[in-house]
Length: 211
Ligand code: GRF
View 1: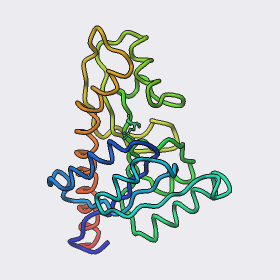
View 2: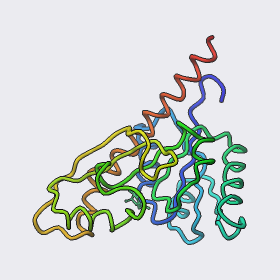
View 3: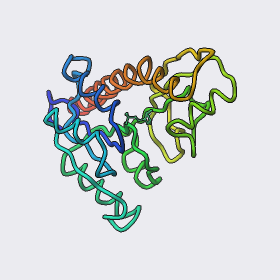
C-alpha cells in the first residue's frame, strides 16, 4: 500500500448480502472514506451478494471448499486471492464458514466480523442466522443488538470494535427481531467499523513510512 492510498477491502459473503449493500452504500455516501471495497468473495455460487457486487461494479470471485479440495485448500486459495489483490482489510459480512487458526493468525488485526447479538451473549459455535435471535427471545432478554469484532481462532471471540443495542419488543418473533437488529444496528455499525479500522490501517502505515 502506498502513501495516500485507501485501505483495500475485501468483503467475504455467503448469502443475501444486505451488510455488503450497507458497506457499498456507505462507500458511495462517504461514510467509508479511508477504505475502498475492491473485491467480494463468496463461498456460495448462488449468493445474491454476488449480484450486489456486480451492480456496484466491484470485482467478485467464487471460492468453494469442495472446489479447493477442503478447508486448507480453500484457505490457501483465499489467501492467494487476497494477496494478489493487495487486500489490507477483510470484512466477514454474513460469511458462513469458520476460518482456521492458521488463517486468522496470518491475517491478525486485519479481519473483522459482524455478529447479530451483544457479545458475549448468544455467540460462538452454532449461533448464526435466526438461531441467535431465537436464543435471545427464549432467554427472555429485553435488549439485544449487534457487535463488530476482530476475528481470531475463537468463533466470535476476538476483540470488540463496536456494539449497538436494540430493544426487544413484546410481540417479537425471531424474524421480526432479526430485521430490527439489521436495520437499527448491523447496517449502521459495520460501515462505521470499516471506516474506523481502515483509518487505523492508513495511520499505522504512515507512521511506519515516517520512521
Ligand atoms: C447477518 O445477520 C450477520 O450479522 C450475520 O449473517 C447475516 C448476514 O446477512 N453474520 P446478509 O447476508 O448481510 O444479508
